[in-house]
Image (cartoon, rainbow, N blue to C red; front, side, top):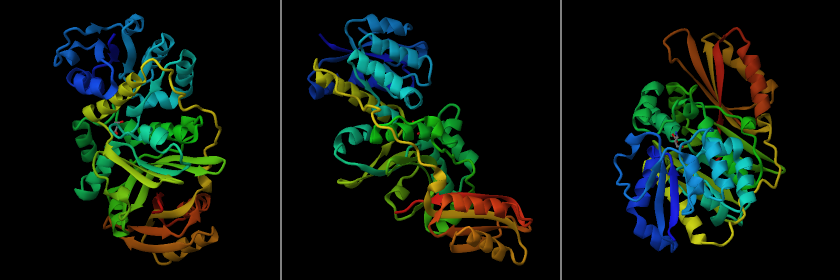
Length: 426
Ligand code: HSE
């Protein structure tokens, strides 16, 4: 009997999976030893199906019908969003179907519930495509690095943000133009707020943290900052200081706790992640025995994401009739460390009136909070009476830096709220 695959949603990613299953049957058969066949496509928009020759494939608008089809072994949910995707997945799992999904938002919000349903029904829930598209990072963490304690991970996980920041850095584009280009190129979410406010990265960060530390991670507890407050001036100042600005997902072992956060950060231009440009993603993983490994590739787009979905289908097909392996379980319990306890160097952009004594007052306030200045310079970006004061601190505690900034921002010489960016260590 063929190994039947049903695809729900033949949009950008789902269409890529349909194409792959139709065009690569020989390769998939050779790689898995199974006769992997696209048997069903569930799609409400018929226009999405026009490009395919679906002879012999059942086309339906009724997702529930897939669950009673005996030849369907895997249901691929590729519509995204919370509902009806969650209901479709739970129904498929409860009907004894393996499920493959690319749905990062759903996993980040309901991963434990979906995993429980898979375990209860003795089937698999796989999600390679949910994080970093074509990069097999889930497999690397679950299998290749399984013997490691993951010390930390830095991830560039959102193609749209990396594209925008790269265009601002290398082409001098402003934020809006770069975002429009990302939308035209088809990798931005709808709406793009999910990208630029950091939530898409947070969903992926949550999945990675759950996987690394086998723990439930409350998506709402992850500190998230997007890139909307990054100005062209910040990009330029950072470069002058020898850094690039990247939106990072950071996960780190912090003893019984963990760091799990998303924010723009200054990355030294000598760091491997600094060379990751445009819509590309990369994940830098520090394991305790493998040491540093780096994974790079396309984190979005039709065929790269289809590559990841198909790899999951292949893994399930290879298993044949043997029992589903244990999923990553939420067996441990780790809290996300309070970000105020973070220690590192900080980039501060103050906008001040250009008056005598301002530097001295700022230095005194920082000093009173135990924050030591590593370097500073002043720029006049506006040709007006306010200037930018750029300060790099020595290693400091974030709560102290924030307390100092609060005090500084209350001073009469401050023209606009100050801006803080964290600096990652090489
Ligand atoms: N909007 C996402 C990105 C798509 O830009 O990376 C892939 O998850």
